[in-house]
Figure 1 (cartoon, rainbow, N blue to C red):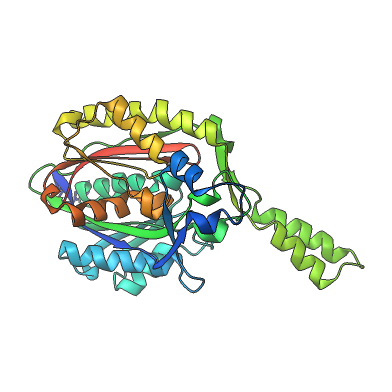
Figure 2 (cartoon, rainbow, N blue to C red):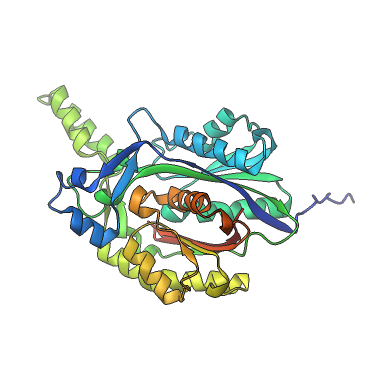
Length: 351
């Protein structure tokens, strides 16, 4: 009987390079409060956000992903045709199919790399790292690209005050490849679907379809009224802020500690802590609960970028390395958490 041939595996993996794409448009708190009953002081105190970056109408999720990916490939010293997998984490690509990743792979010249999207909200980037790590470790691919890319401004109701003022746009990317030494620790991940409704959208696309068909069936409905109905039902983001805050503060610090334990290190061994940029108060509380020493650099990209969901950790990582190049080679704990509710964390060696 013939035996199956086994591929060569890689004992260790690492993050080889980080890239970023940040839209040029900055939206200040002063611009935000024209839509909601709030103030610059309240937004700063409650979230830590001073400005957020948002893309223009002609810039897509794929455009931003491409910018970040090319930057990451350049920093990793890898050409696109060496990629075996292209993974894009996003909840704001406006098409259920085809994937953003397939088009991105084509634009980069990575064809015929495997390409697929991940829908894991703010944990999506860390989910992507876990999968890319496994793909490279198993020998399925030699190099994998992981991108977090979001255009959340397409799903904002400016008059809504639970989440709209938090959100920004952007993309971050990394290249994962083989390593002679451990570069990516075990991933601790999971979900809590009992809090499924804590973060989500006001409507589904099926709601628009059903009510639009109903309006068309009404002989007296005008084209204008049909379009108005569809516009009112466009899905926009909402959250139960208190539920999310309590969950993130009390449960995600435990997940972060489990990731440290799984990697066999402590908070004192870290060079950097890079949590999802959801809220500055959540970041501060996690730092306190984990006992992160003062000498550890903590990512606080949210102040200038807002909450960019799956893009927030790679964007924050890119900025940390730009501003603190001496962190290269050090250990960083990263943790993402968000809608679902889903979460993932791992310790990496910074490229």
